[in-house]
Length: 354
Ligand code: PMP
Image (cartoon, rainbow, N blue to C red; front, side, top):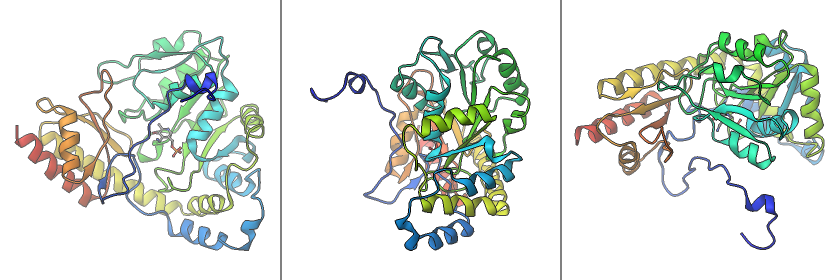
């Protein structure tokens, strides 16, 4: 940091993404990536798009991709917005829907990018404490506020809030936008997309990074009524006309055309999640109910930091935060059956050593 930094830049505390190791091969269970490759249809489409047309700019309106997303989720393309990963889409939601004079509400334990965006755009926010079981209490969200952001299922806990709860929040806040971040919804949770017709203040954000195995391609999307999508387009077109490149458009379109592949890989991950949860419980772990592609676990006898380090020594990366309330927990991405067996063997050693 030096004299040339703006006051805004000096005041920022950026988000820290999970480690992407370059030096050695780890079993990587730290960033909620999908252990299975992208659909062959996505890869074929990317290969086909890697051709001389790359000299031309991509479609700034992402028309074909929005049409496919609309067909997939039963919405008109005018109700769909796409961006460079759902992180970018979420950032644009913060700019498009929230003002500094009224605080935004989100949970105290949730995706740690939300406070970063709020600070970046000079917004105020209030963190609502989850209860002792990491459930979201509804009452604080029914008070007047400047907007709501809910990760559902939540990260890093994996807990799902029912659609009934989401509806209560939408109904109590007709004058504010409710953003539901469904990054992990395809692993067995219920999507709020079906509520879009009824609630003009609802925005649902999803990503191709997790269930469609395309974290490296950077494609996210938002769905909501036309006025909200117009606000997102207004922000986007004041920033960058071409947020998605030709390869990303082609790959995302290919992935959306392969619904069977999504269903099969998502089922596989859900089965592996349940087997791993049962195994870890047998080892004495407390395992939070998860509707996502990760588990949030704690052991009564062994500190999570010790487990984190022990796993790393055994070639396994998981995620830990040195933060109040969750210091005793690890977030473990669900990998292949083989990877999770290796994790359980390592965990048995680590808790058995006590
Ligand atoms: N929302 C949540 C809750 C997440 O955990 C993540 C992944 N870190 C994202 C959004 C962003 O994912 P992406 O930008 O890859 O779409």
